[in-house]
Image (cartoon, rainbow, N blue to C red; front, side):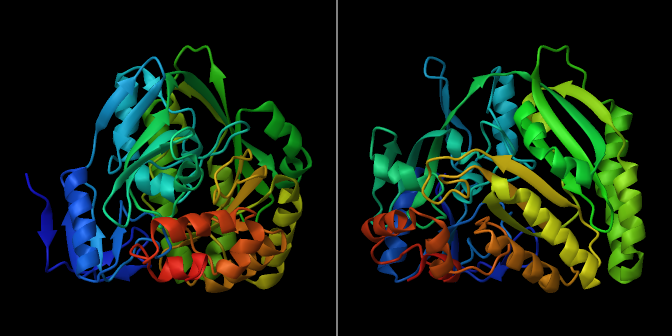
Length: 439
């Protein structure tokens, strides 16, 4: 089957609905060779190139008016190496399919984020992460990468092969080339016990270091306009499996997190004065529960309520101050925020532009219901995050530029030098990369 090229290509929109683009043409290559040819042809035609996954980024990181590469034909597992405990997967494979395929093989990733709609390459290229004391980002679990560079060449990298490319390309923002395959470290499938329970915000902040140290995966959600949080801790378990009951799971995840939450947000958007009362109800509605299941069923949950999100990584030691300042700002601002603030952690890693590069990090994410004006809230939150040398998530709303980012990423210059070498003509450039990486 040949690659599908559509010249008519209409408007492309992201999942959050806040970014759109009109590419000159779209290509869905059926092989790495076809992808190389599409890259070379774009260069000959003087067109920029961007690959796009499922559009889960809230930034315009994948937007282009040139050639849009859609990787949906580049999916599936290439190889499983049980001696090395690695799995090599095509770049367009959705995380959901990878997780299901691994589970059938009795394998699992060590950690993952909370949604699995994204492609593996889109998720890793933007630094998608979960929460973890020893592990967090999906990119930190990469053991090898294959990518097509600006001249159409296919290069491989790992800790031993092209290590300087490996150091940067695991979270490459689409600026170094188009990822075609990823090799992940995996392990035999295991069980996690999740414990979810309400806890006052003051207590969570006072005991945060202890909660972090005592749990493999700790996170919490604070509902603005309330003093309450929902905490979640995931730890490995000897079993037995005790999944969430189907009815309870439907009530908690579908009805409360998606259905009722959707209606509450519609009401809040129409009548902002009702938001604090809704927030108090939301924070009380989720009761304590404990369940045990395989990792992807514990780490991930469906997200059907559309929203816009900003997330920053701050040094883990700065989390308490950051959240207290956020709460003070909200209390004084008169803003009405119906979405909880999500807090997670990651250990320092060795990837040049990882949000956890070289420092133990805490992530603070603020959300607004799609269609609600979010600029005032996000601007005020961003002022707090940047005062703590925050690093914005590459796939979420922020206003930072290369000058700021060079100041909070010690290895920014290393990434830029590699980009100059791999893409001197800036074939993979777009407005977003021009802003965050400089010309």
